[in-house]
Amino acid sequence: MKRDDRKKSVLDTEAEKWPEPQREWAKLAAGAMIFAGAPNEALAPVLDEVRESVAASGQTPSELFGEPVAFGRKRGKQSRPAAQILEGSLPFHSAAGAFTVMLASLGCLLLVLGIWIGFSDGWMARTFAGPVMLLFPLMFGLCGFAAWGWVLRTRGRLRAPLAIWVGTLAGFAGTVALMTALGGFEAPGPPNWAMPPIGIVLIVLAFKLPEPATRPLVDDSAWDDEHYFVHAENLLRGRYLFTKKQAVAALAESREHRQHPGAHGTAAADFGNVERFAAHLAAATRTPLKRGIILRRAGFSLIVVFFGITIISELIEGPTTAWLIIQSVMWLGLVVLLLLAWRPSRISSDAKAVQAERRRTARLLADADEK
Image (cartoon, rainbow, N blue to C red):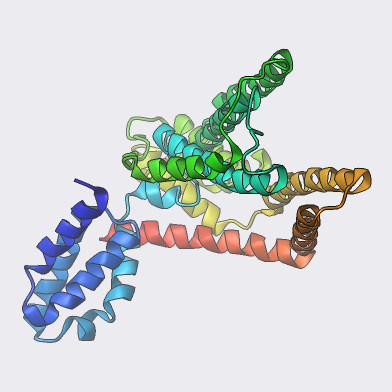
């Protein structure tokens, strides 16, 4: 059964429990919960609670709980697994998710490049031939490997990502060497008109893959205090981009509390799960977030500069075609957007938005604990 069919059956099953006049409210609320990321098993407890409250009060669901979509969106976010709330800003949360994202990204690239090259080189030409046929899968595989290293870093594992990134750089070097060695390899590839459909097939396939299971939060119930605080420090540095000095300062009060002679039990029993604890600290601590924002903008700037060098060299060599003029206009548009993004006020605004998102995550975790 397809994913959409399963969700539809869940909605219908829950809605059938409601009186006919209130059934549409229940379906809208349940649909909004699913759209907000709530698992199917979270629907029944929430809707049962609402239905019992409505029956006891004699009021309508809208009078008690407001509009169904707003209610469902709020409760759906609160019903998500804690790990999903914490990692909501990441493009993927597992190796299976990384494969899905990389497959979809490769499909999008082939779709865009296929159209681009089709207009540039001709639809019947075979631009994607020889070593180029190996280049895209290898490069995307390495990018996915490097991104998985970043996911591990957000989980407080600071050493493994370094090894992964060193391996990624070695892989890039090996790919360049392989492309050089296969320079005379002229195996024919598909015609340019076939690349966009291939890209669409990869995108559809990526969306048809099953959703990876959400991981549980790390089990820290048996950790001693040192293990707990070291992991909390690693989470602050890896997930929330604290410097080591900032992470130590943020944990100083909690460490001091645990060193008090009257402290009993474990740090996990005192402060809660270490991932939740780190999330609340990150939300409560004002840290300079501009470093990560600047690094992301710098990476995008390098891509735009490389794109510009290619276009300028083609303009100098000639001839100036209509397609080259279109590329130049597109590049100028990217330059304008880039200059706007580098404004100090825009960077400060983005940093505030990140901090606000951290506070929302902490509130969602707190609300989920109360449910």
